[in-house]
Every structure is written in C-alpha cells, then in structure tokens.
Image (cartoon, rainbow, N blue to C red; front, side, top):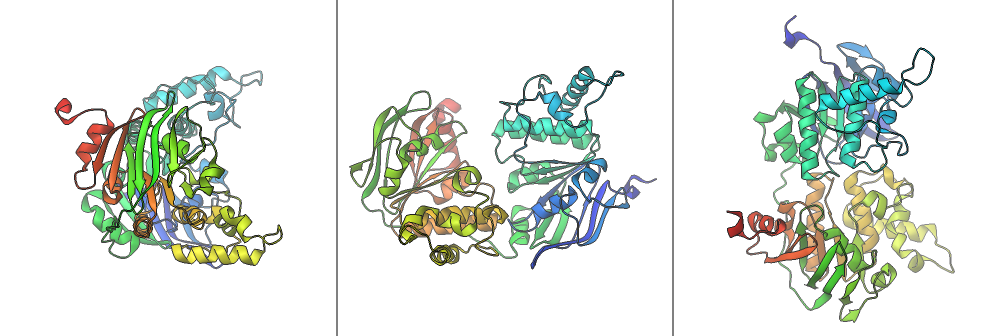
Length: 505
C-alpha cells in the first residue's frame, strides 16, 4: 500500500461537544499522521482543552466520529484511549512522590514473576530502555519526589512508550520549563516523530510552533479554521486566523505622564537569592524586571510585597517605610500583586468567579459581618464588564474559565482595591495572542491613569514593547537600567548574561 494511503493512527471527523448551552466544539475535524508533529493553536476558549479531553477519553463527542487507524472507535473512558495508543503529556504531570520513577511508570500494571510477585527487575529494565530510546538519563530507582517539571514530563513520556502509545498529545508542555529544558523536550519530540509516532503539540509560543511542527491546525470558537504545512504560514497569518481579525498592535503602549516617585526600594538583600537591589517607580510608569530564569526577579517582587522576608534594605511607598514580611501592610499601603502562578497563588480554583474576583474586598462589601450575595455579584460583575471577562455565571467555578479569563479575574481582584503600585509577574504567560493584546492595553491604560506598574516578564518583546524602563537582573543583582529609547534585545541579553557588549565579541 502506498504510504499516503495508510490511514492515520487517529482522526476526528465533524466532532461536536456541548456543555449546557455552551458549544465547545462545532463540527471539528483533525487528522494526526504517523511521523509528524502537528500543532494545534487557537485563543483561550477556542476549544483546544475540550478537544484534548475528547481524544483522551475524558469527554465523549455528542456527534461525529473518532477514527483509530481508519476504523470508528469509541473512547468512553481514558482507558479506552490508552488501549488505542493515545497518551497525554500535561503541562504539570501528577506523579506519586513517594514511589520510584519505575513504580510510577508501571503503576496499576506491574509485571509479575512466575510466583506472582512484582517483577521489579523487569520494571527497571523496561524503564531504562524507554529512557534510552528518548536519549535521557534518569535513574529508574530514584524517588519521583524532587524531580523537576521537565523530568516529570519525561517520566510521563517514558510511561507512554512502555504502553506502546502511538499518539502523544503535548498540552502546553514548555510553559513551566527553562530554555534548556524546553530544547531537551523538543529533541525528545523529534526522536518520537522520527520513530513513527504521531504528536499533537499545543502551544501559544509561535517560535516553538514554527521551529518544531510540520503542520498547523487553527481553531476558533470551537470550529476548524485551517490546516496547512508550517512552511506555508507566517505568524501574522496564524494570528489573523486565530482571532478572526487583525491584531494590529500587540503592544499598545501609550505615552503617560510620569509623576512623583511612589515606590522606593533600597539595598534589598536576601542571602543567596538577591543582593543590593535598588530601584524606584513613578506614577504613570511601567518598569520591567528582565533577566534569565533564576535571576531573582520574582523573588525580589515577592520580598518587596512582603510575601517573603529579606535580610537587609528598605521599601517605601509614598515616602513611608513598609515593614518586611507583612503583605497585609503592603496592601494597606496601596500595593497589589498579580503572581506568576495564578492557579496556585492567585486564585482559589474551586471557588466561584464572583468570590475570587471580590476576595480582596470582602470586608469592605460586608454589612454587620455578613457578605450579601448581591453586593458580591454586583462588584464582580462591574469588574467583569470593565475587563471584558467572558463567563457563563459568576457562580461557576473559576477553574471553568480559560487561562486568559482567569488572569482577568486575578486582575479584577487586585484592581478593585484601587492600588498605587501594581506588581504583575508574567502577566501574559499561557494566554493567547488576542487576550495578550487586551492585557497590554489594560496595563497601558492603568499607567495613563497614574498607576505605578512593576512588570516581570520572560518575553523580551513584551518587555521592550511595554516598559518605560528596563531593569535587567543577573544572579540576583541589577546589572543594567535601560531607558525605553535605548533598550533592545541585544542590550538586555548582554546584561542578563552578566556581560558587556565588548566582552561578548
């Protein structure tokens, strides 16, 4: 048989899925071919997560078909998808920390000896063999506790290999990885592709999509938009198809009047983490903290806000000193923090949208010690409208929202306190390009209203596009302060690596 006539290991044909009145998938088709890395891109809320859960057997389609090797298949449960050779590698895998790597890989399906006992030697051998095929070195006997996110993902991929999975779904796998870890994952992905596996790669990072993937499928509002070879596309075309409109300005930075100094940080030091950090921020100014992963940017922000203590130095807001390690005092002084990890540090995921959006104002909204539901809903609705929040009901769990809308809830929670200084740590991580533009527009508008903003970002285009000044950190110290007019990728990267331009030549 001609290879082009071989049916793909997995395909979806005109699949629909609704949750109540919400149509998550609208006649969506997708074909995953052996020996290919296929990108799936779309805005948050476009249906990507529902599609992945349908392939994984978590959701059953309302209409349409799933085809495995060209034959109709019914995935009534995840076990059915696994038997068909499907494996999903999530952004943050969940391993059993007290079990070894090999035990995690074979959990629930341990091989047996002739005597009926667990064949640990075989488990170790097959685990080592899987890692060998992937070209990575992880000890099968080491406990899972303490493994990095990157290594946990590799354990899940090895698990898929021992299950003889032929279709691997990678859902935002690099969101929590460093550049080196991401490159190692890409090497593994290419190894799997070259061995004949079919991979579906979901990412908001276009550089990854264009460097790694063979084809790109774009989805919008739960429907198929296009599927093309990566070489036939450019970023502007993909963005236009994703959002259904031209995104003319991703970084809509407006000029704002800079007023008095509102935040002063002087000599801030925490042993082994950062040292002698000093900077100030004026009203109407956006100051970015840039640098490589591990440079100490987030740690400085957490210490300034009072989440973590520091050993020396001082923090002043509007000229008044703040006590160290007291977030409540920081909030009282007019500071607000949108943390890097919104799911674990910014939101109560099982809580309602309304409760999360008003969590910083419960005392102000309460009457005689009670919080009226109407007051909570009115306050949440007001901020939802201001920020363009897309939701079904304010009583829905915040976990039901897309990543971009979850970020808007965190922003609503803090902006409702009318802060003087807003810290935003990775404000657009894991959200789509359309929502990124909305967040950037909001930050620019807030600066225009006189808010002082400190932004931590690992995306250099975001730093250069939004900041009035860039403070670059390297190994816990500020190595450069660059004005917007002179900051560029080269100057930032020199400072982020601790070099001067003439040293890098």
